[in-house]
Amino acid sequence: MPHIRERLASTGISNRTSEIIVASWRSKTQKQYASYLRRWDSFCSQHGINPIKPTIGNALQFLTDLFDGGLSYSSVNSARSAISSIILPIDGVTFGSHALTTRFMKGVFNCRPSFPRYKTIWDVGVLLNFLKSLGSTNELSLKLLSKKVVTLLALVTAQRIQTLHLICIDDVLISDKECHLRIGSLLKQSRPGVHQADLVLPIFSENPDLCIVTNLSEYIKRTSIVRGEEKVLFISFQKPFKALSRDSISRWIKDMLKSAGIDTSVFTAHSVRSASTSAAATAGVPIQLILQTAGWSGAQTFAKFYNKPIIEKPAFSTSVLNKNR
Image 1 (cartoon, one colour):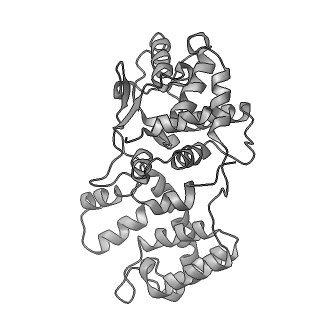
Image 2: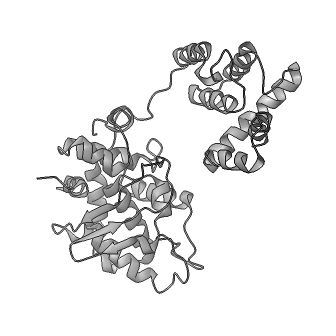
Image 3: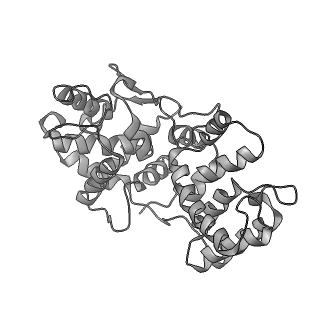
């Protein structure tokens, strides 16, 4: 991110310190910012503007051009964050926090509203009944078992695809009563002092074929023969049995949703997260447990994006699995 390094250098910050500061942005954010910063650089070159020290009018005109080009509220907001990271303070505040910028973004939202993707969500019972119909876990092919396990794990943990992709085999501890999953990598929501807590999944004795502990144990046993040095939990079900990509995990889950009769032209693999947490909320699981399990810090995100009407300390996974009754 050369523009950010240039701005930092202009304030007397060393190259090494700049490297550490740039590392505060995750790689995905850096890639996203880079796209908008290239467009900002082009805009500044065309209009003879200093990219690090523009006027508030210059910067807002750039966002206006993006908006007029058809970009959504979220895209314009990402561009705002990107250029705010390199522009020197204007009127004593960062560009992103400037009163005119804040007012402009409200206008963008009103002109082109951004709403949650789903208004309703599918019933997890539909997916659970399909998974149950597949038959005995130990008789499934490795291909079907792999897709079943990743889908069931997404359902009973309400985790992002990113999280499932990062789970390592050494982070899975299975006992007679439960399974512990330790998330050792940085996640989207990770920040100093806040990280995804270990996931504890109890045995679902009512139906072994829907029990994540039973299915996960069988998956680990089967893949131990072919995984070689691969440390990640999920690997491909055919040679060369390499670590599964995030896209492949999403595709597997989408395949299972489609097979269950869920409309995948409307609902993506990520919709499992919404369906799972909505089912738990309907079953009376305390909001704090839902937030903790899914990795959210507050109820606002859950209420806005995930708690949808469904087309003792209760266990999150058990409350979801009971929807198959």
